[in-house]
Image (cartoon, rainbow, N blue to C red):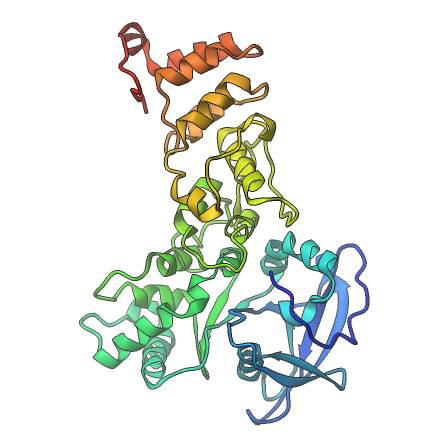
Length: 395
């Protein structure tokens, strides 16, 4: 999460467990000034609110809104999102990161980074602002809104009109779908509504309509839809996901800081079996973060993981399938706390257990005999008795 200068005259310090909520005052005309107020509450006892998800944008041009009667400047994309979400008759209670978090306060930013999952999970709904509309996206949104009115069972069959198809492709390629920090917004949402310009449609309709597209969509967009409410996975009870799967699905997502390709996923991770919990820490180097990820995947302590031979997180993620055997040999030889049973059970997709690892385990002064027994049991008696070739792989 990034910080930029703005006017923060209304941000009183937060106490432990508190968040700020934004009251977006009603406006009957799109051109009416945007007026807002902040309030403070306990997250666990918060009134009904919605948590906005949007792409901050690369355009740093700002627009003025009124916050407690004072001028407060926000980026153009957020200004448009507030303008589109504003109701004509009543105020709308929202959580909006750029306004509700004091962007001058690094401690507050880091604290919220680890709480984003809870903030989005406790929201009644997540409005997703994709940007302003075009003629083509308006046609596609109208198409989906008609489906929504009739019910999802009434989705028409057959080829879509070319303009509608163009609009779908535009919507699903919007920058929102490419950003790492929006992934957990989709994952934690109890309900989600996608806004494009003045039109809006529920996530379930977007998912069903996308199934009619004649060509495969961008993998990132597909994985995001797969996490949303209304998807096959989204209908399950917010079950967490293994870190390895998330890293594979979203390694091409875009971030300003490469470490966020990992930090942005942590709120969705199942750490139940892990020996190494990972928390967002921007004082951590990329190398140390790689070691922490490997420790998590290998069910061992970070101190037994050698320095990876990669310079960047991007390079590391590109070489994670499988994990480098030189690294694994060092872990097997030195780890005092490795949970080898869990590693064999959950890591077969990214671990290649060969005889070089058995030899490395045999040199482990703490758990060597036990590790060799477990590994040979996994390899099987026939393969254990045979003479392996150098570099042979069992899994």
